[in-house]
Length: 156
Image (cartoon, rainbow, N blue to C red; front, side):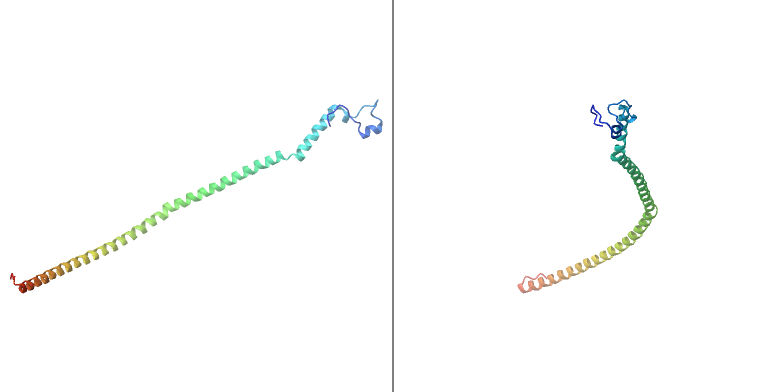
């Protein structure tokens, strides 16, 4: 196995007196057979102790399964979103528009009524101010006349 030049006799060969030999070696002792044994040992070693191919195969399988399941899950999520959007567009939006229109019309009527009330109040206030202004003018005119009489510069 070491690949060196000399071979040591196997225990069974030494017991049979093989070493100096007139007897033929077993088929295991030939150089071609040693190569086959080493090759077989390498394969056994790689299969038993080298887990890279198995691990890589498992990883590839896991990724394949994960992508398939994830793809299906994402497809279901997208279909659910599509259904929600369609339902919103077909059912919810018209209801919301109708409710909004009704609410806006009602609010507009209330605002118009409030605006009319404010306009009437402003007109009353302006009329009251005009009336008060006229009274002030008369009062001021009366004061002026009375003060003019006192001073002797009567105009009237």
